[in-house]
Image (spheres, rainbow, N blue to C red):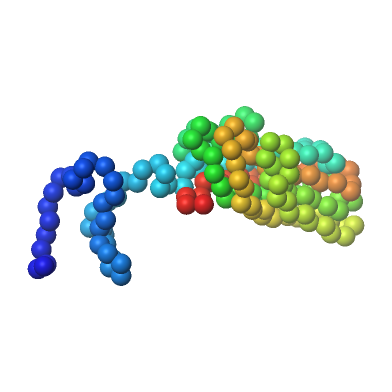
Length: 190
């Protein structure tokens, strides 16, 4: 067949349902000069991204703190709650998700803190965590401590995901910095 241009408004199968194949094995279909509209099953959605709006000071040590990511940057399905700081899997959104927290915290007062645990939770239970342990001078000099925890989670409709920090081994208070993010998305094809 000779090279040419096919101009049509709609391509359908002869029966009106089934599979339409463009190209064959070993060929490349080039759509660089046009745009593609993907259906919902071909997108990495639901997806969300939220961050701590400004430094949050006076957080208690020796307690679990849900990271207060109230500044919503992305929420494709309206499933992230800025008051509870959690993502809840919406109807039709079950699947495998990549979830990440990037937390920046520092000692605001006190001394002796030795351990920080950053965690991703599903329905209130830790699923992925990053623990930082240091010597007796840990965070006594007001230095930022930046850590990341990530995970692949198999989530069902109505499951909720949040992120936490737990600091112990000392007394005083903790500041959660504005550079703290909580985000994730459903993985297509998984």
